[in-house]
Image (cartoon, rainbow, N blue to C red):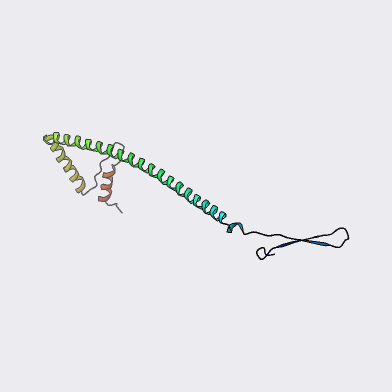
Length: 154
């Protein structure tokens, strides 16, 4: 049965016990489909627009929250860097003062010369030299130098 080609007719057959069937027909009309009506199309377009606006607002809210979080994190890291910079600047200033105080002293210059002499002996030795701790362990830098300069026996 095709509902869109002319007026449909509903036919009902009824029978009474052992009687001949009696057919009764009634005609009725079917209007235009709902999705073709103007008010339905308007309502559907309004619902779609409202959905798009809601998704856009939700997305914008998430972006703004992420922006605030990142701004707070950036401010915190910036303040940490400023504190670290101030600390390092004070350390550099202290070292410069200490070096200037020691720079004019003969014992400090002798200490630097002695350290340079020891380092030259250590690095240019033909045999392995290691500086050991009380636990008989080589320090990291000395162990690397020792391993690099002394070949293992075969």
